[in-house]
Length: 278
Length: 303
Image (cartoon, rainbow over all chains, first blue to last red):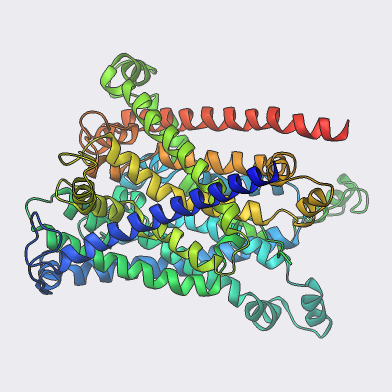
């Protein structure tokens, strides 16, 4: 009986590892195929291309006006990160520290935009933005991207602020600091790691946010991911390699930030605070 | 002035608005929540309500003509089923994969490294995954070459521009999300509980059934809902990897076409509302099902 059980669990273990392996191999092959193709001179019907070149990167850079697109992406992402922290952190502070009438309603208000997928609320939102003549502009794209990121910052920061001892603030008050000084000299230094983590995650999310930008962007306010979509959508007109070169540029921009973000945050801690297994 | 004061009850008997607000917890610090709340109200709640009202003000016909048009045209109402047929199996498969992997990975020393690798697809985004799958799964791609080389298939297997392309992209982009949630729920369980069960002689499978599963079900139900809602609103990969005119004409494509190809914002809003309603129905069903499931073991454990 016992032997049968260990044999079963061994088989089960191997199966789980095989599944992980299969997933990772396919994922790496997927990324690898794009990478190889972006450096290929031409690649048809063979395992590997006959020659390698970097000219597709230059071609993609010119063809898709990537310098403009990257600039727009940077501006949008920066504005979204700064604004969502500015709006989100004070709200998170209140939710973490105060009990007030209607708190549950306010919390629900902040959870909803994260539960409803972007394309569902994006279409009515784009309609409103078009009527306000904001769609197609940078302002419109930034506003649209703030809708999921402000609640995201609040949800990440609230538990972070809860774990900061409120006695520190009280102590500063006893010594005569006003709200502004408590904020600048006590809260900001203590909150900095959490804000950095939240900001980085917002950054990664915004770079990868397709739907909202797609629905609200005009020709001069496209971010990298939307430009990539259009280039894949219109593939056939252009060489596949230059589309893949663009995909690689896009991937590099997100991956760099992901790895930086993961140095500061444990992704599993985002949902519940984890008890350390001893 | 004196008459005016006399008209009103004394301040002690009737506190000022400010006092009453403070008693309910609304003081100056609480006001910090107002900008964020206002922002969400203006850019999320207002557009949603606006869209809902707009959907009842069609370009022609009565108030409900958008909805009757949707449910009388198979080209439109079939998208509900098409999307469901993609989103439901993909979500179930992701959950089935994420659970055992999360259990395997939770106590590993290099858990974080493996987690990072498994999480990569989230940051790649659906567009890049679609482009990658087009290259990798295409008739000349590495996967088909491997299958033919190994003799598993005589000719290239068609995996792009059909149902399977979209399905696979949903699995690849959805799995990391479900995995992260499941992992955090699994690691959140106090390790003393299964240890106690093991002391009392419960093997791994009984520990799972009587300790982990009841504790995990609420979290898993939420993970399922979130993953399903994401999968149900699939858009770019259904266009790029699927057959957007036929088998993978999902509901978001119908909404997009109404809004940006026919410029019928009223109809587009109606489709978006129908999409939200379908998602809501599934979420409510899952959460109700969880309650049924969750009460059982709790009751028997106590009784």
